[in-house]
Image (cartoon, rainbow, N blue to C red; front, side, top):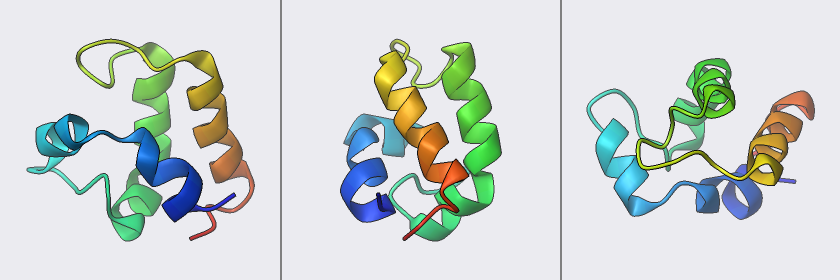
Length: 71
């Protein structure tokens, strides 16, 4: 599992634009830094703002964190 292949594609252009003033969802460094906060909002169903991710995608993000956040 890697950021470029498995995680970055989960974030749509619209999601990136919504968060751009805080950090870049297409940047490994930014997502790595904010991974725990991103996961918390994904679990709460408040990100993205137009509807919750499918549980499988949330689990993929969580697994990426557990695996050490590989680039």
